[in-house]
Length: 124
Image 1 (cartoon, rainbow, N blue to C red):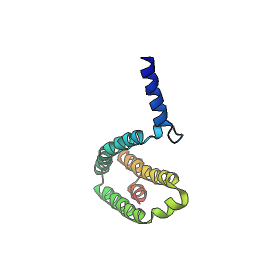
Image 2 (image 1 turned 60 degrees about the horizontal axis):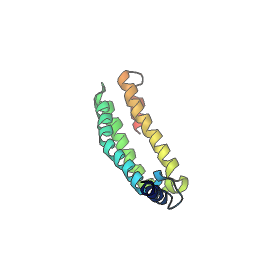
Image 3 (image 1 turned 120 degrees about the horizontal axis):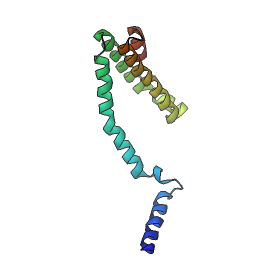
């Protein structure tokens, strides 16, 4: 039994250190993480859009969403430039931070803490 167990550890060490990296960098683990993210994204998107649709002024929601889609379109065309200059991690950090401001403005608008102009500006 010890020899069998020892063989499994050797195989795990070989698989996880093929390129000198820990096990979490293997293709299998990265595929599982990406699969979980892709599984959760539609639900998160639906909750955000329903939060936008549930605010008191549908005009604000429509204009903010239109600006958001316009920004998605423009940034899709020019995104390779900052990614090549900054690298993928800083570019993703900046994009995620800006998207969080949009979601936060929707939430605060539904609570009455900010005005409609703030939501539209965050969408843009």
